[in-house]
Amino acid sequence: MARVDFYVLKQAGPDARRRFACRLAEKAYRLDNRVHIHTTSPSDAEHLDELLWTFRDGSFVPHRLLGAGEDDEAPVTIGFGDAEPPAGELLINLADEVPAIATAFARIAELVTSDDDCRAKSRQRFAAYRDNGDEIDTHQL
Image 1 (tube, rainbow, N blue to C red):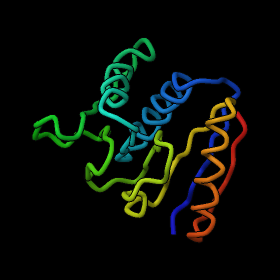
Image 2: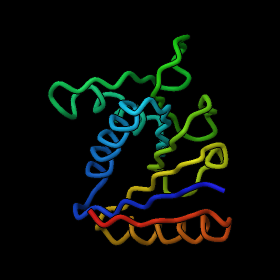
Image 3: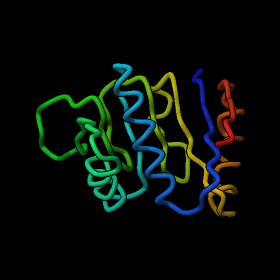
């Protein structure tokens, strides 16, 4: 059973989710947690990879894309689809569905923006976590 936190953002659009994912990953990294950010596609993963370098002046979040052929074990990984991340404490899910890898994490962060499509898909994920018996908490930001 995982602890799932739904972060409900006032902003709309995928960029708001990505930026909040960067902030959350940075906070978890500073607390010595291993983080995996799950995206919907290769292009989303690459966009997030770039954003992690630039989202805030002075920030440093060591990270890598899964499957990039790098041998180092970065504390933050970014992947999509069936990519298997290394063991970690926190999964940040930016996909539309609950990924199969979710069961490997004790904590899951779901980011919800104010647009109707994102809210509808997050309700489906909420129901899936609830049906799985996971502990769910919602944070209005």
